[in-house]
Length: 165
Image (cartoon, rainbow, N blue to C red):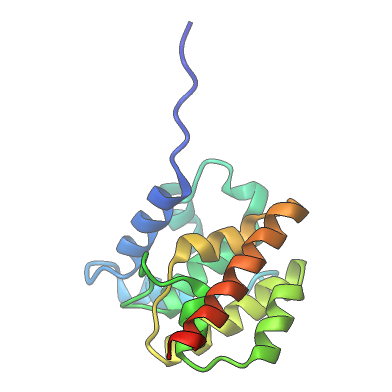
């Protein structure tokens, strides 16, 4: 009897994806096509080529979320992923407004993806990378309890970072 293939941890998948998208060897035109993607709209073939190579096997079950993740990483090129900078800390460091954070954390579905990409654009403009594993979990987590715990961690990091300043 054969064993089921091992599922890669999200940390491994996200780190690899960020390394590929932010690599100087990644075609500029492909990165630009990924950057222009908007969840809910048609996606370029570039996304499918990337997704089938780098996203987890079940990515199609969370298609819009993975589109948001890939588009966001492309927006933040060349410095998208910093495993030591939580999303809440990155937002606090860049003076993100508390009201915008509240709207982001309270959002669901398509609004959550849209607000998340707006947040990513804000961080990209400030040249502030963050831990994309946390960003991916923010989009991919559907369990209400786990989502609330993640929201609380982001808020805690946001407020703890402000107190350090």
